[in-house]
Image (cartoon, rainbow, N blue to C red; front, side):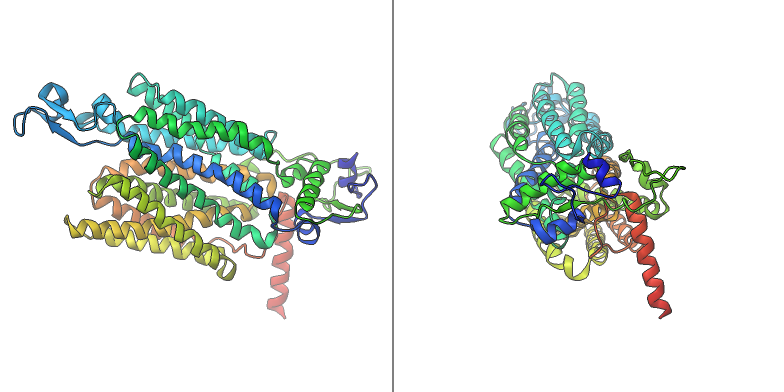
Length: 523
């Protein structure tokens, strides 16, 4: 009954009667429930913790697949061919179980398997991002999708620790990637959709702090389990199981998802819970409206008909002239961004410095980027910051590619890399906020899933770039960052624009904005 009322001219409040005041979710948050109070803070912190879980499953490969120190057991100069391993007298300093490289001899002619295992993980991320991006917008919802992928992450991660051989290991990394690819996307949308418009952008910028925290955590855990890559996988997988079974059941689904799925009573129930936790109240005569309800939904006889829920696929965004160019540009930008970000993260093996320290330094370098971009976001907007951070990263990586030598030169290259990851971390943080505002609720997760797939393609290529040596990878990262920054020029600004519910509502809003701009130019 409430769905019919919502779509045929009436809407229902929480008191059982027809609402006389119909508001969008943004307006209901601003006027009554509160934009960012105790309810949103709790939801934001607990949901965003999933970003740390994604970092654990992603960055564990740096340590599990590392090449440990190797020494000659019978004395220097007495061992044979190093590629022959134990048969030639060579022994791994921390034991054969310290990494997959040591256990399965992934050196010399077998070294490509390290990059292959990392690439198939990101290939799994690419597939999973598309699948769960669609399911999150359709029947599973944001919360349901996040619960499924976190549970699968734990299962596949624990099974990885039992891998009997390399090929089983690679297959399980593929499956782990499949469930990892959409963790951050689902968490970001679930955490930020219940937040009011003036606080949403800044809050979204802070989600990546959890990812950086996860990166630093995995370095600490790896330092503790240096002698066993299998125990490392167990320790980085169990938190996902705890999160899926103990944390997520206590959290709420997004009211925006309820609304676009034509479940306004559930959406209002969540909003009233937000208001109550924030010490506020939504009047009984307030109901919700969706932003396309003013579109003509009459049949040939002039009768109003119910509008079906959106299919929630990325095709909805691609067929629209309003969003097609946005989607294509974001796919390209995300691809280039991922080549640089994941390339710099994995490139620590080429820096000839302490691998644990390098990962921690990279994670710490990201944190100021999140703070600075969050502070500047409301002042300068999404577009200028995205351009500036990508160009900063691209230029610093280009400089690093021109630095040759070891010792002090190696440290200088590392410093340029830190600046590069600082800039690209800021870009990644901005892009998810930017992309979520460029598309409406009914396709938001599907679009973010698509851009995440592009990101994973870049991540697949990143390990292949890393094996090219010390300086060439920096050159590739530099060119990618500069091109990506130039592409951002063609995206529209979204600062102070409404967060639309539907494709029809977005197109109507863009037409109205375009007409206003034309009137201003004519005046």
